Amino acid sequence: MANIKSAKKRILVINKRTERNKAIRSRVKTYIKKVYAAIEAEDKALATTALNDAISEMSKACTKGVYHKNTVSRKISRMTRAVNALS
Image (cartoon, rainbow, N blue to C red; front, side):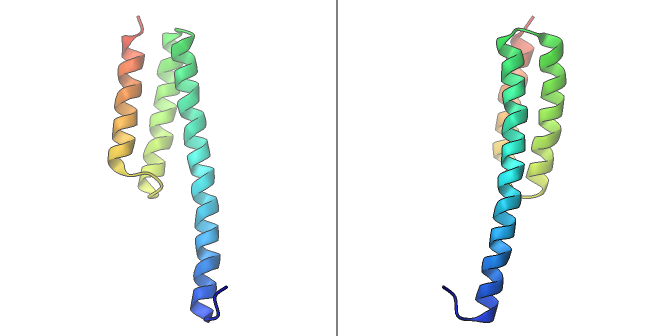
């Protein structure tokens, strides 16, 4: 356990940020699952709306520093290709 006051504060801050990041990651994963579920069901309209929602959430997570921009870009690209393959 930390003895220095600033180190104790850092522990509190890190815990708070970790909880926030977990919540954001969980939310993004849920939106991604919705996209792939719509793809499995072969419902293009539902997949398109789910994709737009997922892109929005992933972009927000990227802006907040939860995900790296290249990771978000890669995931969006793969989902978009999968949705566009439906027809």
